[in-house]
Picture (tube, rainbow, N blue to C red):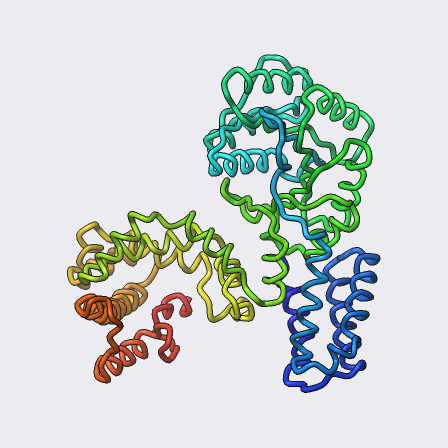
Length: 478
C-alpha cells in the first residue's frame, strides 16, 4: 500500500546525499516533495501541515545544518515525526481486560468485519488463547452462515443460538464463554452502507449488554479519508478503542493509516494484508515507518518465516543438502514455503536496502510465474521428482502437456535445477569441511571459488551474471 509514498519520500532524500553542509533552501525543497507525497497519498491536510511544520522546526536547527551527517539527521527527524503520527502506540488489544474478554467489531457494510473476526480468532489461537465467535448481523443475508464458514477455516468455535435478537445472541455467547472456559468472545456486529440511528442504537444496546473491553472499528483502507470520517463518527456515538485497517495489500495510497490516529484519536490495533485467515498482523508503527523509508523490516520478515517454515522440515532439508540429496520434490516444497510468506513484493520490502527492487517488476518472479514452475514439477511422477535423470524426451513432452508449458520450458527448468544442485553440493562440501575442523571456519580454495562462480554464471544464481538462462530464466522468459 505504501509503495508509491515510500518511493516519493526516498527520492526526496536523494538530493541530500553526499552534501557536507545543508542550506535552508535544500531543506525546503525536500519538505516540499514530502508534502506533495503525503497529500497525493490522501493524508489529511491538517495532519500534513502540522507534520511539515514540526519537521521544518527541527531540521532548520543550526546543529542539524552544520552536523557532519546532515542528510542522515534530516532522515532521522522525518522518521521520528512519522512515528509521532501514530502517537507512539503499539497495536493489539487492551491490556488487563477482565475474563472473558469481549471484543466488539464495528464498521460499515463491506469493510471486512466478518473475515476480520475469523482472522482475529486465528491470531488469538496462535497466542494460546481459546476464543469463541458470534454474529449479531441478523439482517444481511447469509451473514451468520458466513461467520460459521470462516470460523471453521480458522479453527475457532462459533456460537449459533436459535434466537435472531442481536442483543440476546451477544449475551448468550458471553454466557457460553463463561460456561465452557473460553477466554475471549468476538462479536461480529451488523453494518450499513452508511451511518444511521438504527445501527447506532443497536450497537449501543449490545455494548451495554456485554460490556466489551475492546471496540475495534474495521476500516477499509481503500476508502481513504472516508474511512477516517466514519471511524470518527463511530467513536463519537459508540466509542472506539482501536482501528483495524483491512486490504493493506491493495493499491490504496496509505493516507488512512497515517491520518487515523491524529484525526480520530484512537490507535491502529491490527492490519489485514491478504485474503487468507492468517493475514492479520499486530500494528507496529516503527516497522511501517522503516519500510516507508526503505530501511526494511527484519522483525516482521522473521515472524513470517517462523510461521511459514516448519522446523522439522528445515532440519530434514539441511540434512539432504549436506548429503547432496536435494530433489525437485524438495524444490517444490520450498516454492510453497515462499508463497506462504505472502506476496513477494511484500517480503522483498522487508529486507533492508531492497525496497527499490520492488519496482523492478521485469526482474522478479511473481506468484503466477512461481506457480508455473510449480506446475511443471507437479506434472512429474514421484520417481521423476526424486531422480531428474529419468526425464527422457517423451516424458518431457508429457510433462509439458500436463503443465500447460512447452518442452523448452521443461528442459530449461531441469537444466537450471542440475546447475543449482552442483552449487549446493559445493556449499555442502565446504560446510562438511568446517565440521571436520571442529567447527572452525575453513576458506574455500581458489579452485572451489572458480567452480562456484562458473556455476553461478551458468545458472544466473545470486552472485553470478544475470542472463536469460538463469535460475529464473524460465520465469523471465514468460
